[in-house]
Amino acid sequence: MLKPHHVLLCVSLLQDGGVEGSRTGTAVVEGIQWPDDLQPLATLDGPAVLAAHAALQRVLSRYPKEYAKSCTYSAKGMEVIVGEERGIYFVRINPRPDKCGWAPGTVLGFDVFELYAVSPEGKVLARYPAMP
Image (cartoon, rainbow, N blue to C red):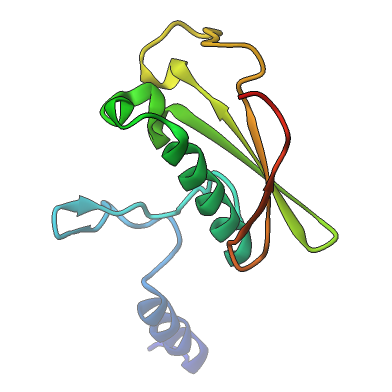
């Protein structure tokens, strides 16, 4: 016969989904295979995400419209770095042509990064003075 603490352990395990690592597969919902344990690329607070989005949109809007279909001039071909100092987010956008099939280390121009100061609300305050 089971002792009361064994019953409580079994009930607890059933409620929690069993022993960790005992799953035999991942959940597939709406055609998406969902991870058992999400491994984040980075953890950003909401204002940092707003700042990154605002700066990336500003960079993309500076390209001529005929470049819009090119991977190199899309969000896929960019690297976004976000930092925060004194309540202002600083967002640096680097072109990454290697993300679009170019050879690693390919540079499309000199000093091509863009740096923006962005408010926590996602308003671009200034672009670092650089060419063009």
